[in-house]
Each structure stands twice: as structure tokens, then as C-alpha cells.
Image 1 (tube, rainbow, N blue to C red):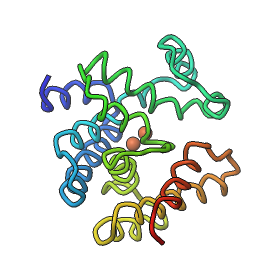
Image 2: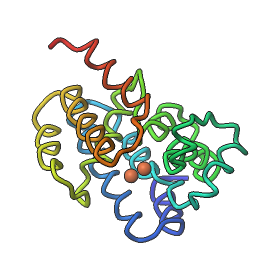
Image 3: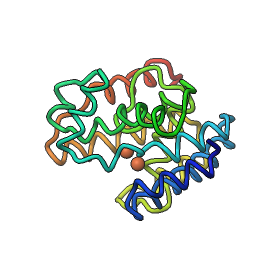
Length: 190
Ligand SMILES: [Fe+2]
Ligand SMILES: [Fe+2]
């Protein structure tokens, strides 16, 4: 299946607004891939398909994930919507024929991040947060950083933004997000 066919199939699965978001993530991921020397085709496919499991009913997400023996944490059980990312890897494989592990890993980590994120993982996480349809306080600052500074600096800001948002909502902070942020801070030259 080529990327045009993937787009056509995805369009039949997602609500128009969600599909527009996925196209936005794909286009932003391509721009970021150019800027940070990442494979553009992989970035395009991962960006396009990152939310391919996002329209599953929340009540079915855990069930579908269990069916496929995906690892489910307590936090995922409390906030099942988080499982659309790991479940997305299974759907990308089953319905879109994706077998590239780098693409699948980027889809899996797009919502909460994780330790040992590759540059492709980081670009998809970021593209999801800054694609043109996104509107929240702080998005402009992130867009500007993504266009001007190094990838890890933008990622720290992206994690800060996301952790602050989740704390304000009173939700649990996913340990993968904390691990991802700590890992960058521990390896980065400050
Ligand atoms: Fe998502
Ligand atoms: Fe998304």
C-alpha cells in the first residue's frame, strides 16, 4: 500500500476533523524530518497513521488492546484513551501493512512518550502537538522552538507543556512521560 492509498483508507476510518489533524501531523512531521535529518518517508507515514486507532470507542480500547496482548498500565486503565497509541501500532500493521519497527514505535510513543525515544519518535510526538490545527496557550512558543532550536530542547518544552496541562486537570502523570523527560535531561549537556 502506498501513502496515497493509506490516506484514502484512513479518511474512511476517521471523522473529517480527525483526518485533517492527521494530515497536519504528516505535513509537520515532514518539515521536522527535513530540519532534524530524519527519514522523511517514515516521518510522513508515522505522522499520517499516528491516530489510526483514535476513533475506537473508549470502552473498546482496553478490550481491543487485551485481545492483542498489548501491555496495559494502571494509568492506561484509568485513562483508556491513552491506549490508542499502542493499539495504533497494531492497527497500522493489520490494516495498513506497516512492518517497519521505527514507524510502529513512533506511533506507539506519540501520546505519552517513553525512554529511549528516537529522533523519529520525537518528531512525531512534537508534530502531534504543533500541527497547524492545534490551539492552546503555549503552542506558538513550541512552534517557534521547533523551527529554531535543537530537538532535545524543544522536547523538554513539549514535555513541560504537556505535564503542566495534565497536572492542572488533576490527572496522573504517565511514568513514560517522566522517563522521557528525565532521560533527555540526564544525557543533554546543559
Ligand atoms: Fe493521538
Ligand atoms: Fe494526534
